[in-house]
Image (cartoon, rainbow, N blue to C red):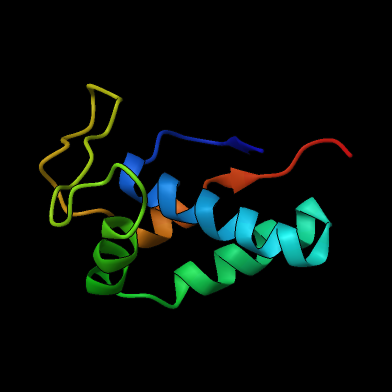
Length: 91
């Protein structure tokens, strides 16, 4: 899996966690990613923050910064910008 543009770590972590959860049940990477994208696309910022807070090592309420210095890490995550960036390439 790759991202087509930089995304905030909080969004990326949740999309990846949901992808792997779906992959465990389905076994198909493309289907698992699509399921995760549909799931996260329906969430609001509060749901994203709650799910991120449940990840190991995450601090509840702490927005992980964007690693791209050209984009403000103080901004709230743009959920569509985040979940839509992922693509599966390969088998």
